[in-house]
Image (cartoon, rainbow, N blue to C red; front, side, top):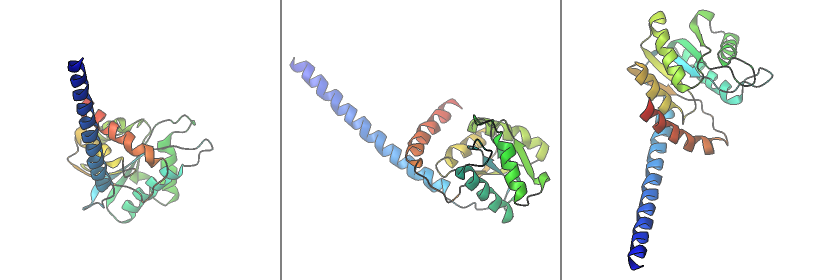
Amino acid sequence: MACFVRMRARWVKFSLCFILLAGLWFIVHTGYSIYVGTRQPTHPADAAVILGNKVNVDGTLSERLEQRLAAGYELYQRGLVEYLVVSGGLGKEGHYEGDKMRDYLLAQGVPADKIIVDNLGNNTLATAQNLKALQSQYHFSSVIVVSQYFHVLRSAMLVRRAGFADVQGYSPNYVEWRDIYSVPREFIAFYADWLLH
């Protein structure tokens, strides 16, 4: 009985230490992720890849997606990128995100030949792989990834692993209540992609 009690105490101590260390690592990782995701680009790039998000049933853009597009358009206006790659999939609402994103940029006055549409970017990994497939056609080697601040770190990692050495990130100045669960979810997604891809 005494042996069982000691063993249980050791397991409780080990579990508490593990939880503490995991919590500390989450804080460190999240802090670094926010730092990376909110930095300004330090130099121009060939293209900005704007990752897709929800398009509403009526075909209008979600606020989140519109903010991403505005951030990408800002990079184009500042002369930091030559091309804007819009990448997204077919949402459950029935719209191709890439097409709707292109329409937004066209309405802002971006020339059609400066917009590259990827309607098969169903997730971040697919976007990175599709971007690599477009590289030979458009001859770009440097990229600025545009997404939410907490998503930039993982997106940039996957784009680098797809074969791009010069990858920066940029995010809109936009936060919302769903960030409360998006940030910890992104922590898990980062390490899942880091291990699997």
